[in-house]
Structures are given as C-alpha cells and as structure tokens.
Image 1 (cartoon, rainbow, N blue to C red):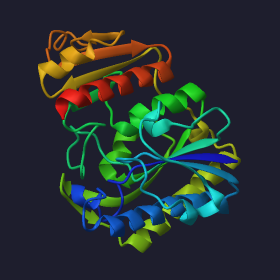
Image 2 (cartoon, rainbow, N blue to C red):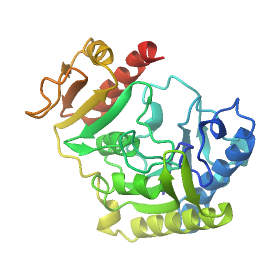
Image 3 (tube, one colour):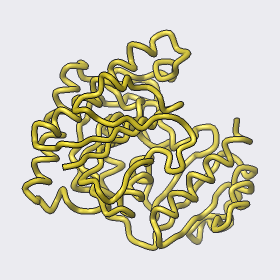
Length: 287
C-alpha cells in the first residue's frame, strides 16, 4: 500500500506564531523538529497497519523543512519550490491514499491558528462549489483527479471541520484547539504524535478492509467552480489575465464584486493548476 503525504507546518501542535514557521525565526529549529515528529507519527501509524511505500511532499514555505535522513518508513522526500503542482506535486493514480499533515484553516475561518489560503497577502476567501474551502479542500481537487481518497488530516479542529464536507471519510487528528488566529490550546507533543499515529493506523486499516466510508473519493461535483475573493480589486484584475478566469463571483449577489474572480472546469487537476497560477501571478503585486 502506497501513501502520499503532503506536509504543511502551521497545524503542528504548539505552533501559534509565524516566526516559529520561518527559517529566520530563532525558534524555528525547535518547531521544525515537532513537525518532523508529527510527519513520522503519520508514517509509523500507516506502517503498523500495513502500508509499505511513502512519498512526503514538503509543502510549507520554501518547502525544505524536513530532515530527509530522519523520515520514517524509508519515505521518499519531495522538496523545493516552484513545483508545478505545488502542495500536491508527485501525486498520481498509483497511490492508495493521501494524508494531509499539519494543515491549517482558511483565511476567512473563525478561530483558526495562522489561518490563510495559499497567500495571506492576496487571498481573502476561497469557495469550492459554494462551500468555504481551505487549502485541504482545494488540494483535494488533485486527489479527485487521480481518483485517490484523502484518508487523514491533522491540525486544529477548524481545519478538520473545513475538510469534512469535501472528504467526509477522512480520519482527523485534532492536535490543538484554536483560540484565535494567534493562540491555541495544544496537546503535549508526545500526545499529539500518539493521536496522529492512531488515526493514521485506523485510516490505513479501514482502507485495507475496504471500508467504503474511507475509500470514498473527494465529494466534489464536476464541473467544479472555485470562487476567489482577493484583498483588493487590483489583484482580481490581474487574475483575469489568465485564460479561464472570469471577473466577479459565481452567485447573483456577488456577480459584479470587483474583488472576486471565478474559475470553472470539468477537469479538477486543470482547475487546480489554474488556481495555483492565479496565486503565483498575484503574489508579485501583493508582496
């Protein structure tokens, strides 16, 4: 059994500040180690249940946060920036399941530690088929395209709840309760890893037992529509330079909103690529 693991960092138990997630921060080495332990806990739990192959796509920041020689399970390590499929680079139909580890809530979510949706300087909100979507739901488009179920997500409770409408069968390891965007009540790191290990084990065990609730593909109707609200109209205007991106929202009330754009496609992977292109293009003017 082959597991694809996409790791972020803001969802790690104990992480509540941007400086803890940035290589320039004085405490980054410590929190980087906590992330490594949570990633390994997910791998170890999957190993216990019979998984045999792992690919870890480092998806946070400069995407080089983990120590390859310390990854459990002989996992392959996909790292580095400017990946064509970004947080989902390396996934294909040969995998049996997707794990999202140390994920965080969307920019417009209530009580989500270090909330953002790809680029906090540009993106204010994203909706997928009308439902509020964080990075996990947007990334699930690629899983759907390759027909691979999302079996596990770890992070705070808000993050788990945001994914649920799109991947109701995914196991959730809630390692912290967000108080607000910069505060959280976290499990002890050891307990967080134990919880992640247990949920990963149960997810893979359910897959091996052909539990249909876990084996379900992401519940995203096609053609799918992403509606993106930017922080100002200039960013929305720039996004429309990309073919297939229309100015305004998807509903009657926001159709003429100058801060919004709409993307629709029957191919979920192509839709994701277009979204990532929008994010990368608008990043230049936002920063």
